[in-house]
Length: 401
Ligand code: PLP
Picture 1 (cartoon, rainbow, N blue to C red):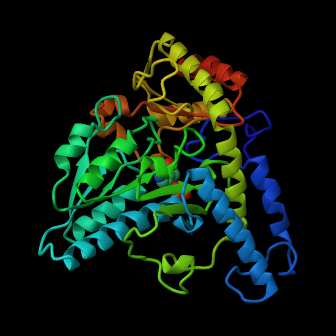
Picture 2 (picture 1 turned 90 degrees about the horizontal axis):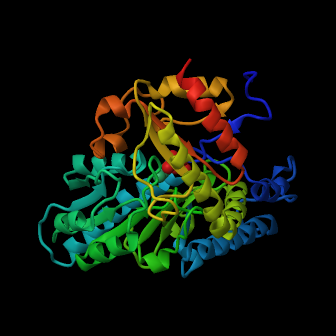
Picture 3 (picture 1 turned 135 degrees about the horizontal axis):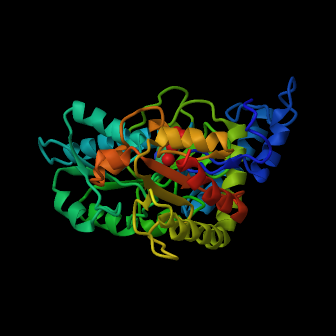
């Protein structure tokens, strides 16, 4: 382990992954028993004997609890997945295909199905949309305005009679802009299209209620809310047409085959319940830290906030601060801050190994020279005021090196 990764390392990359929270760690402990399937919860939730039935009961308790956390009306609207990448893929491919087939069956004749996404989606939505394009679908990618918002007029203008699916994320993982999802879902439905939202960054940070939002599907990931990696869920509203792409043993009522990751599901549920319980209080605490950063950053000569976030604004996530540093590459800054004991990011974790400017910043029409100096600070449950003061002290020193 590098020497600077000591107890006092300041982790400010929660949007990439949050540290495992106490509730999840405690809930998963009984699942670490080895050599005995009947102790802890070593059973397969699909087995008929009592070990399996006990695992099944645990899993269904989690499904009920998670459904409640996200405002689903029925527990069976929660489909467990291996994470949000799988949930996003399943939603984009599975909803588009099923809705296209439904329209064909109802006699809509021959038409080229149309899918609308925003240009600032995670690659887990953009890549399946591209796959649909290669299969003959028409895909519209809506650009955001300079502040990171998709305009309702732009969505309304893009919708047409051939649109089968709209997928727009609830909150952006790089700049934190929160989209008006309820209004967007309403527009999509008025045009006969299904609506999916990637709610990964929103869960636990702002209120997420899939029934109030009236979406057909929503993706969630455990490790962004303090749960373990490799587990997530897709909310799929009852009676929503869906073509499964994970075929096999027929688990998750045939919608997603594969033995469920029970230990992960238990950790996910405990973390999610804790995050949702603390959400309102955490919003106050984190947005105050965010506002402090946005207030102080412009005092550093080379630094500019990427978007205009007003004090107390609910239009942006409370835990993300994004800046552009003139004359520096993100990589240099990340590595310098890392050696000073502070972990930040240049944007999404997926693009952090590529030298290309982030697709989110490009879509916001930020010129590529400036976009190369992007830094994202993302905070969470264990971030303290003194962490933020330490970052504010370290930044000028890091720039003068
Ligand atoms: N969607 C968004 C908005 C994300 O931030 C991420 C994670 O980076 C994902 C999807 C993918 O989630 P997972 O890591 O669970 O596959």
